[in-house]
Image (tube, rainbow, N blue to C red; front, side, top):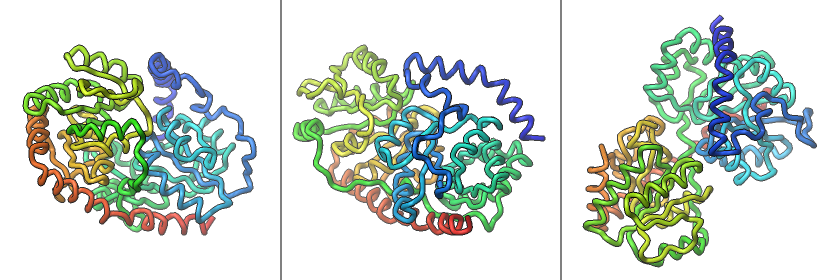
Length: 424
């Protein structure tokens, strides 16, 4: 009954959802492309063999796609004859999937959680196992998979207090949904307990750690652009994955820092590509000499570089003196704090951390991260850290050490994956 009501509401909301996609496509044309995939209307990919073992991984967007990279590689190593299908919801997630995996995996957008769309997708791909990254619990999708005998694994499971309260409002529905999952790999003990409190079978929940700790920071030759920035020997603040309303706060903090540190360079990387031009205009209106990454060389008089490239986040962090991770001075829950930490960069983050709550607590407890309440505290901490090289180095090393100590998530996860594949 709950799922029927949910489906009716979804059908009623569909015109609004499609209108929102078309509106977003005015800024990001990719949103109006491949609409058919949202309803599983695409043809079966050429060369796809329904008789082969098919492993389906669903990653929402960029962060989950990157986190799935080590899992994909391990599945390809252990099951070289298997077909891996990777779905995302966003064009940026799709772009990152192609960048990471090329033609070695099949990529599509996940269909909307409507009974017809879910069944069409399953008819085409006939997966044997579906691995859902983080907390992608779609009722019709889970039900359709369960009815067809598709094994279900929730990997890198994360459930914040806020999300748990939301699911808890529909306790019976949520319990029924969780009971259909074969195995839940939780990032940390608090996540595991919240899943159990909502009705997950205690025996099906395992704490495996987070795949996001598996950051590939192997030494590689720096691109000429970033070498040029590094060779300028200026202190560099990287403000990454910033959101609407957050850049103003970062620019306010930066302006205060320039009073004491006039040579400070800000690399400002907005979260969404459609906002690159807007953020550049904002920076120029605030009086800063500004260029975009795509403009090329950074002259000595430049104060701000707008990072308008994709797939270079580790390159930006690689030249940072200090990193501020965005999505945290506005209430969007923070982005991935582990990438700068893995590179030994001291991390500053705002109070909104629900997307990475456990990881932020771990990093802060270890001494690799500091939480700032607002732009005033952000400016103070930037200035203090830049003037104190010893504290910067110690903070960076503590964060790096924590990342090194949490590299066991993949083997722990594979202990759950392998039995599900063996019983297929």
